[in-house]
Amino acid sequence: DIVMTQSPDSLAVSLGERATINCKSSQSVLYSSNNKNYLAWYQERPGQPPKLLIYWASARESGVPDRFSGSGSGTDFTLTISSLQAEDVAVYYCQQYYTSPSFGQGTKLEIK
Amino acid sequence: QVQLVQSGAEVKKPGASVKVSCKASGYTFSNYGITWVRQAPGQGLEWMGWINPYKGKTNYVQKFQGRVTMTTDTSTSIAYMELRSLRSDDTAVYYCAKGSGTSPEDFFDSWGQGTLVTVSS
Image (cartoon, rainbow over all chains, first blue to last red; front, side, top):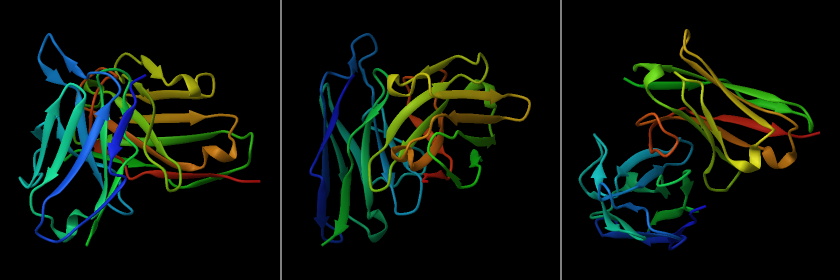
């Protein structure tokens, strides 16, 4: 099984500032035959179900603001929010789908 | 638009069973996998398994093997997840989610609202 580890566990950022969340997989999720990273990011606001933000490590889901971006390859990935807005307060999860899906433990993002 | 609407909250005693439903609309139900994910209070997301609605093929996490059954009714576009021999640590919000394709190795582009299952004597 692939274990996903996020850092930090929690993060406080000022409005308008950049927020960066990291995700590391215990083995590579890059499929060599198609050069795609099988990695997604979700946002879970309080009292709501998770919402897909990013898939294939860097493809933004339709309707997701462009301040959200994903990067990385192999085993190390990053979700960046370029300019934090109040509505971005949430828990963020990475998920690999290279094998049977597994999620990171989550990163709680708050306003400083 | 794609919608997944789940059944309401349940309270069960230890040893009982629960069956959660997930009604899909806004897309061709048979063409995409349905995954079940649970979230214990204050905890993260745990993938439980997947079903291909068209073929009925399933893939369960080993820890739930023998206790979980996922089914679908393509005539009504409803997916079901039954969990048996409930324990207190099964207390969680259970989510259904639509996959982007037809395999269990997938990301999930739409989610149900969640169903709280409480196991308590």
